[in-house]
Length: 414
Picture 1: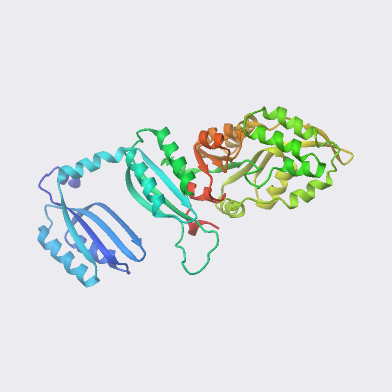
Picture 2: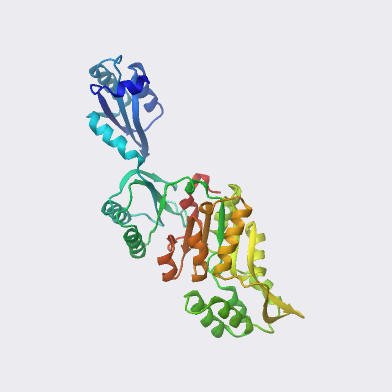
């Protein structure tokens, strides 16, 4: 109540203190001890270190029983000089402070930039779009470690996260502009509402072919059966959404009739994992996430990946086998787009999760139902139609990029 009564007093002085200089232990402790001695109220504060350069800002208000501002500023100036820091004071009008407070209830969102090498062009283009949409940047954070200019650290990422305030003027235009910048400059950009669900995702569901692995298994089977061209043509048409998935599925597996099942083991053992897959699953498992494969491919290969990556659930199609050879038919229901969405709902129910806590990742049109259903739907190196329809797209980087969308930092990734 004392603070509330004091805030009603328009004569209170509000002062914004900005400190800058080389970072070293004790800077913040020393300066805040001065504020404590003068019995001020702290209204806002923030601190960041960029390349060992400290930036500290504190907005404080003098109480009725505080010393006059000249005494406080003098003590702060003296301490800053001793610390080798530059200090600046700005008086803030109470009306301006109240206007700032009134903005705090506005919607907040997270914009994530993910690139192999982050450049000024990336930042300029993205911040321009943010400004045009009437959004205000409150905070910029780096999620990845610093890059060495001398040592080759491999295929590392540069990821920064913007916390922005406000509602976009045109959400569709915002997405369209981000997709354009991504395509032209090679940066992946994600825009998410910053809510409780974003910070509490617990289930991640993946398509398999061309998502977890860098191939279409049915094409590999077709090569062994000598019908690759026929099967590949049908596959591409189905992925583009030009023909019904179920019909295309039955046509393709019919062409595999007579293939010896022994080839499946050899194909499984040589499946090319997508970049970042092992790092992603290692981190998700360590952090308690549940994972699933929801695939229009085949459960033989899904179960192989389940063992290899520690995946919790696999739902895929089963090929019928007689006398050690494929019959050209399937067993059970066909896992198409609708079935994937149905299985996502079932898994969310089984794990006692809200759909907003689920993530779905895929590349084809039959992945869209689950991508649109999940709280975080990601088109991964997807066809143009899928990318345009999905909430988010990763087109330039590996599967482990998903970790940054969830909010992981490099130090938390296994």
